[in-house]
Length: 126
Image (cartoon, rainbow, N blue to C red; front, side, top):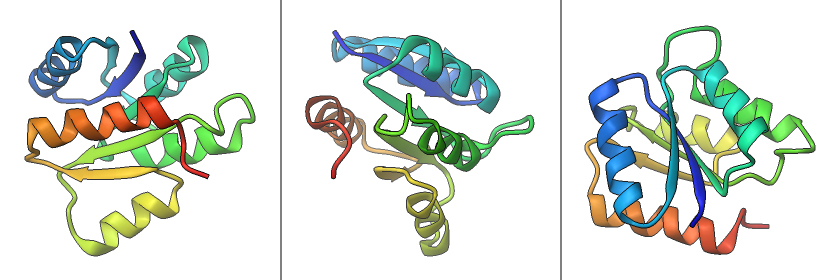
């Protein structure tokens, strides 16, 4: 069972994603803010971090991704951005921040589970 950190400020969506990933056999640590996501990633050493971009507080999903990449202890942690921001420049900004994958909301559950599973199995691409 892989540990996955999910950072989503919408509690209903966070619960849904937690349920989806739990049913796929993962242990999920759900948080609602970027600083909590960063702390959970450093503490729990998850297999994957699933981050929303837009979150309240000082750290959005892009800032969390950059912080994870800058820390040698989490630099190789696979990051999937799951966000409502779907314009090409948003996707580019997400990938430029160091994210490994990007899925726009609303999302296809099967595709999402497949992408997370691939990141769990393969780790961060070289």
